[in-house]
Image (cartoon, rainbow over all chains, first blue to last red; front, side):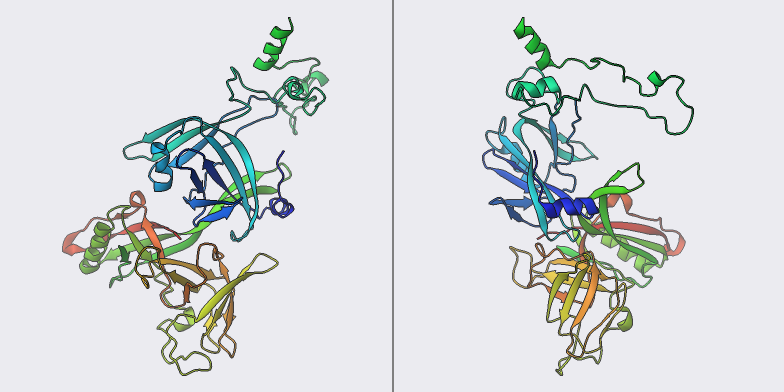
Length: 217
Length: 232
């Protein structure tokens, strides 16, 4: 659950928000960078600017879908981020992502929320002649890491493994994609109006659910 | 080393100085264009050169040579607006309000406030009484880069007036500008100035090209694209 400050929610609602990201990787030395142009301090931490507008924006995820890694793409030549390659204890280093919401002038920080916490899985360096130099860090959140064979699902079965009384996902069977007839020809039968809406379970069982079935035998 | 933008006899035929903003759009079926803006705005410039004389051609060539691709920076300015529109040839004869000190461009102090509508209003103090700032005039800001000697003034950015303003009798003008000055980046001790406002820019080499030189050393135009390099 993410708690976003009311002022930031109001800015998002009004469409006036400027969004950027910050990342802390607890390797040695600790790397703290954010996507603005000047240094910033929040949560008692000082972040160095890297001016990367796209930092920490690639976060995938869908209801009923498997948890995904978070891909951090950093510049390969910024002294702040290049230090990541030489740092000790990078593998498995705890990493925290913040999403920062500014007002439309970019000078007032409305909200800084932890967006994800996880551990660094792989760090790849890519230097292409005539292309770009970048460092790609894969961040595993708890939903995927901690030695799991498969991925956690945003599904009812998986959620009830955490708390049997938590029915937040009970109406989710699998990633829903419905084709709605928006004008055009009417469907011939009611059953074909919403493809895949037939009764019963039609999604794939997650690894965790399969594991639970195996254990219960 | 930060180079100066060439000021050649043939000049720059066309220039486009704009504020680059990047949006993440989330359009909705309702027709509403939702979304947020990613990061903070920068200046981006495109200079177009027409057929130019041999001397100007050599100067542009030397400028591109000295830029060394992306290695060096230059002070990019809008050649159509080196001074406010009402004072195209400088501030000769103007004095700061209430004094006999000649006004050369810098304000004595500045501040920025944000209105309830989100407009950024810069207050410039120490201007001549009645000084006119027109729409499209630039307000430059310069401050010292950390780690270099005092007074190096190697950090530059600028803002553009979007509403007209006039200094009052005591030399104070309130100007609505875009983009808003990032006050967490630009120190309060920075100097706001109306003369020759520039921003530090970096070349985009793959989009910058000078045309070939023909008979008599006449160069067949060219285009140069640069993006602001904003640093604390």
